[in-house]
Image 1 (cartoon, one colour):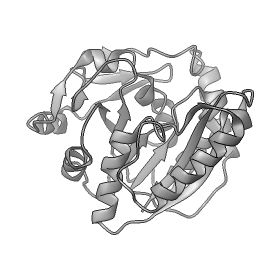
Image 2: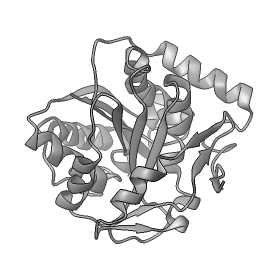
Image 3: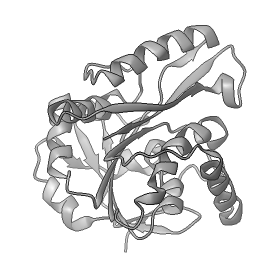
Image 4: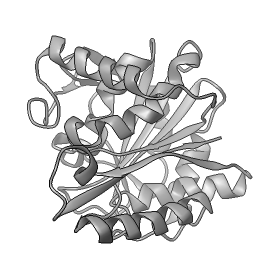
Length: 259
């Protein structure tokens, strides 16, 4: 079996299984319990000390659904590799210090037929936007398979087409990985992110990279939500100045539920 090894364990999150298990469980247990049944979540992807509490506000919602969810479609932006379209890995599993997650290779084989999809291991090898979600998923769900997709320059319609194909029923959860604004001072970031949050809640599918680094997968998901008459509910919006950094140059984080 070809397994993608973790690239950011020890930097974005602990590489010790016991320490990682402890921090994820603590983050999730500290998050507010709410009565939502998400079809999709939008979550941030920074180091756990920065965005972990915000991400946990979304993952806490899975507690009542974990017995039903058997497949997670995970889409995030490409930070390291210039990419046109969307990319699957050639591996059969993703590994973290907690355990190994099998990929749904049968369904991945189906979506290889889409013209916007390619197999590109190098887009996945060091990509943190997908990897940092895996320990949360391993902690909050029971047995599941993963479909990891790195999204480069792709239109909302191209991304939406793939999401629609993978939609499934209550057994399928969709995760969009994105941070918000980058490297403004605290006041500027708060203003910008509040404007972006309003657009997300209004299902706008024309977000830019300056608003959300995961704008390409996010725009596709919002296009689907718009078509299906769904609602986006904001769970938490903060930035690194609120969590674990100074306020001179911050990164924004938001967690949302789509149902």
